[in-house]
Image (cartoon, rainbow, N blue to C red; front, side, top):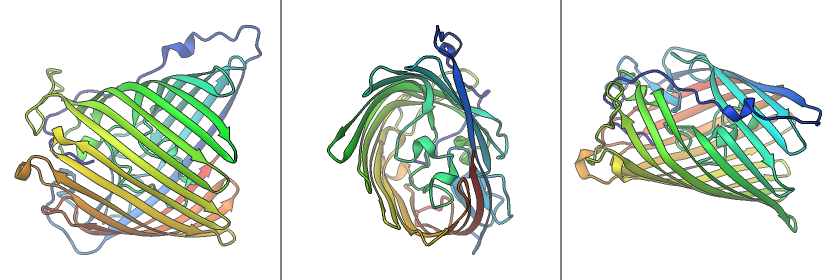
Length: 382
C-alpha cells in the first residue's frame, strides 16, 4: 500500500479526456442533461507524544502526523488545517438517446499543489436492460467505496479507512462491461474492466519523496461481483496490473527494490455491509501482492453504527500489515487505527460529523508514528 522507493523528480500532471464525448450524436432524440455535485469541508488536527523521524520525508517537520488521504497526500499534523481533505465536486450527465449517455465529473481540492482534476469522463451505452458498456475515464473500483470515495455524505464516518483506501492510483482510462439481474430477493451485478493509468506528478509519491514522481499502472484488468437484498450487500473483487516508476527526465522506467523495471501487482477484496433496522455495519477484508516492490499486505476494517433520530454514532477498527518479500531490504509497515464518530443529519442533503482516531504505528522502523486525531466535517450533496 505504501511503497518506500520513490527517489527522482517528476514532470507535469496528466488529465486524460474522452474524445468520444465530442463525437456522440443525439440524432432525432431530444437531448437532456443534468448537473449534480457534492462537497466536504473538513478540519483536523493531531496531538499526542511527539515522534521524531520516520520513513516519510513529508513528516520531518511535524511532531505528530496522520495520513487521512494517501492518494492526494492529505496529511494532518499538530496545526489545525482544512486543507488535507476539503473538496468539492461537480458532475454532469447528458443523455443523447434512450441508451447512450455521457458523464463527466471534476473535483477540486484544497491540498498543497492541488487543482481541479477530471475524475470521470466516460460514455455509457445501455445495450439492454441487463447489459451496459462504458468507455472513458473512471474511478478504479478496487474496493467497495471506491466509486464514491470523495462523497463524504455517503458514509457515517468522515472518511473511508485510510488503512484500506490508501493507494497511489485511483483512476484508470479504459472500458468496463456490466451485467445486472435479479434472482429472487437478490440483485446481482457483475463487472469486468480493463485499461491503464499514467499518473504524472503523483501526489502519493510526495509522502516519501521531496519531489513528485511519475507512476504508470499498465494492462489493468479486473472484475467484481456484487449481491444485495434489502439489508445485506456482499462484494468480491480482483484487480491486477503492471507497475512502473518512470524517470521524469528521461522517460525510462526506474529500478524497483527487487531489481526489475516493470513490476506486477494484484489486489483482492471482499466486503459485507449490513443496513438492518437502525443498525449499520460496514466491513472489508483485502490483500495485495506487490512482491516486485518488496512486500505483500493484508488489511481491513469494521465499522458499526446505529441511527438514533438524526444522530448516528459509529465505532471502527482497521488494520494494515505488510510482510517483506525481500528480507531486510524492505521494512514492512504495521498499522492499527481505532475510531469513533458522530454524524448529525442537518438536512436531507447535508450532515455534520465529529470524529476521533487513534492511529498506532507498530512498524519495526517508524513510518508515521503514533497519533491521535480530532476532525470535524460538513458534507453536502446537491
